[in-house]
Length: 346
Ligand SMILES: [Fe+2]
Image (cartoon, rainbow, N blue to C red):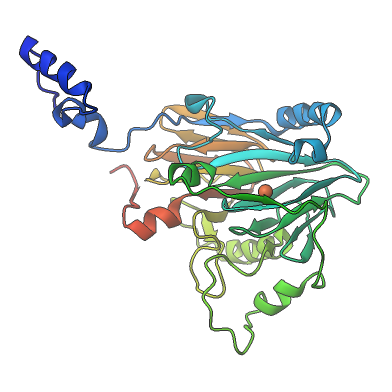
């Protein structure tokens, strides 16, 4: 819809009502209600070796304790200064160097971790620790106490994904600090996985937790599942083999605000055009290839991170067998009924 032409009388009217904090809808409607998604978010890629080098520099400048979290925020080039990788989501890469702790706190923002490098540093969530390994997907739910520590001799890097912009939009942010580096540990390691991750459920469990009670989805298990499935050769033309992480208590997404996915593309696979309304952050966990997002071509290798905005057609090309982890705000869009996808060139 075209914006109606401005006349001297109309302009005078707009100026008059402007002083009363009013605006004529017909002057802004075209920008508010667009025929299809129109976003400032643009396709972009961050190379892991560049992130890693900058992070090691940051490691010499500030401790995890002083920083509270030593993280470099991945800012979408179209959204600089806003600490967001898509319009609704935040991403950063966190470093915990040997023998340091990122102190315990909790907040209304939900967080996911996807481990990039290092072996055996831990995250503690609600009184239970989990050791992290590359490719593990770890959850910190809404208002759950969490701290991170590294008792190993290697630096540990992971991707943080949070719903910060979403919570900011809703003006619903709270944070509390425990005042201790580490929270008390009351459960043995593996407790949640044993209770909820073995296709079993405690007999009296009838609560439907919004966030999955499993807080570490180890890559070893995920990779084995992908391996088995890919042996069937039953590939989806748009996705290869793509799975979503799920909450075993509900079957829904593992987290209420962020959908998390893992997919494998065999060597030489080229996906058919696909687009959806959830802008998506990808991590190339394994392999090498490129992703065309609209007119942009993003060349990726292991651990590179890239982003595809809402509704831009995506085509992945894998030069080697590749595994992509991804996350988006899809659960939120599904809940309010606006999520949409289009497959193929239509
Ligand atoms: Fe946190």
